[in-house]
Length: 275
Image (tube, rainbow, N blue to C red; front, side, top):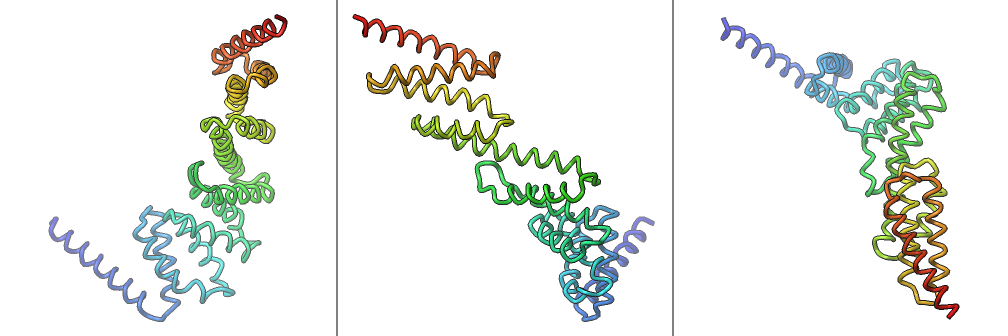
């Protein structure tokens, strides 16, 4: 009985494959449309990427031929969504974008705006790499939010924008902090100042305040003697800035150690000046 069932399944599978290959090779676009739509529907329902891939091969052949025809909207949508479901996000982002322009009044337009943005979100790289796709994703999500302030995906869209902005914050912070690591303390102070001004709500704000203090302190103690007192006073001001916002922060112990040394150095300098 098991063998018979296996044989029947094999015959059906081979028959289906044979029919697919036949339709794929022929020029009958109606047959291609029907099979592509059927395979897409089955693939989505059964979560089978193999059927979606077969559908995509057919769609590649017929989508251009149906543009401007009644079936064109349906085909353009499933074409875009097939790429999306197959996680081919560069393609899905582009195709959903085309869909929104070609069919602005479609019932699928809101979903297309969202999935175009989500596609670019998925290809946004880690913070250390070029962030072109990150900016593109933010712009797309903002377009969706502007068009559909009460939309179905508004909560997710806002959350994803937050994630993307955090990534940009991290990149900006790491660039600024890199000057500190390379001991270019003047550049570090300027870059960290810019970061603080440009990113008032960043999760990296405390670190920026501390490393600005740390950079000023290290710049001061490694300066020519004539420059030390003035630069120590600047570092002291940065200490006060840090403590004002983060009195129980992660770097309080290090900040206090800097202040103790700053005050000792200033007192010694004053004593020597008065001698």
